[in-house]
Image (cartoon, rainbow, N blue to C red; front, side):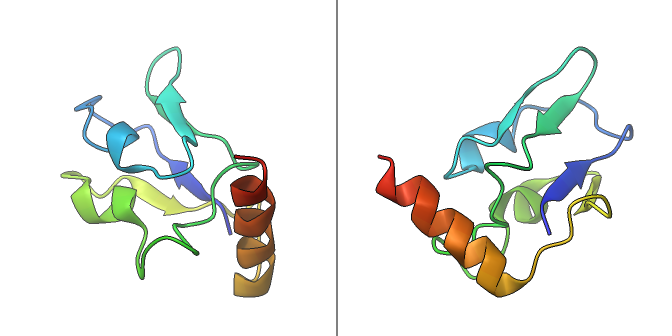
Length: 83
């Protein structure tokens, strides 16, 4: 699954630099995660780094973008291959 930042986001700026895929960016009101780039840090880390650093726990699994770990790994390989 890709991750999702809820409207509880306080725009603290700590999640964006932690994303190894560049999936997090400032939206109109809060930070947003691009589900096409989010791999939940599969291929990079054991856990999603944005979730680890979020002080308000506003990053959840996106129910609209369900993906298996294999699908996340395939996305990581596609993204990493494009670099």
